[in-house]
Length: 68
Image 1 (cartoon, one colour):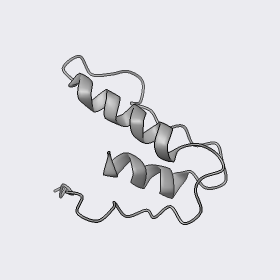
Image 2 (cartoon, rainbow, N blue to C red; image 1 turned 60 degrees about the horizontal axis):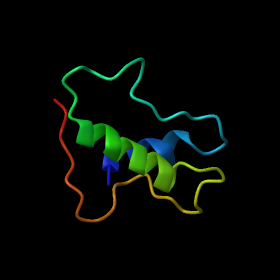
Image 3 (tube, one colour; image 1 turned 45 degrees about the vertical axis):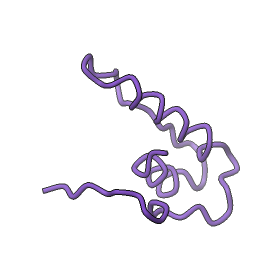
């Protein structure tokens, strides 16, 4: 699953109105599996009403990139 997508849904989703997307378009060199993973995360975690207690933190064992 996609920890960053789950994190965004949990953070911005409560209250309604959040749209998880790739922004304005999909980058031409984006791997298709990344787009499918985003879709899967939206279907699993992004339906209103949001699951009670959906943690903003990625699930245990998920790798997290550090941004510099």
